[in-house]
Amino acid sequence: MPEEQQLHGGLTNAGKVTRVGDTVRRPQSRTSASTHALLDHLERVGFDGSPRFLGIDEQGREMLSFIPGDAVVAPYEAWALTDEALISVAVLLRRYHEAVASFDATDHVWPQSLPSAYRGGLVTHNDPNLDNFIFSGGHAVALIDFDLACPGSAVWDVACAGRLWAPLRDERDVPQPLRGRSIGRLRTFVEAYGLPEPERARVSDAALSALDWCYRIVRDAIADGHQAFGRQWRAGDRMRAERTRRWIIAHRQHMQALLAESDACCHTRGNEVQ
Image (cartoon, rainbow, N blue to C red; front, side, top):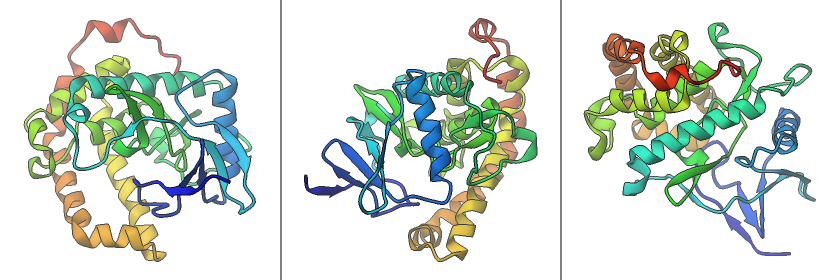
């Protein structure tokens, strides 16, 4: 048996995810069966941007294929903050949505429900944080950690990812090379994804809803005794979340106006993943 190596990144399963040879071992949850069905579907349709579900090990942990590459973790390297990296994330997210569009989400139990305005038949990732993408050569090649996946909509996932990758937050919480560029990078992301114009007007509102939804999950976890979330919350996440919320509200009209401007690339993409 190869030696287990702890994998770093993420908070939900902090310290509990390991690599064993070419596999990743992770704790199961009450909805893991739904996640496994989702990953099996992605494998069947030929989507190469997610781990493969390999079964359950002797300790009851799920086994996933290990995807070589780099995750984006602080302190961020220069390549992770480029527009090329941003665009590659949008393209990969679009490819995931196209692959998952044929997955039947009924008869599965999911960990969370999205706000009713953003629920639909598309199983969205819902946690497109920087460390949940694997990069090779500066381009996103895989999306990992589907623990929060549930039925949603493309505009929701685009807003979730855009908020984190632009990023949409107070300037003091933005990496120095990206300060003053957040809204422009959001437009770059939305256009690279190819979100149709009628949906682009909803992105800023969805980003605010996604922020509230995300931090409600964090607060619930803290109330249940999750130590890693608690440490981060006390160390500054609570204040950053409040600053982010104020920033999104203050800049919502600017975002809506910029995203409403027509762009030729958005007229060339289909609506099949809405």
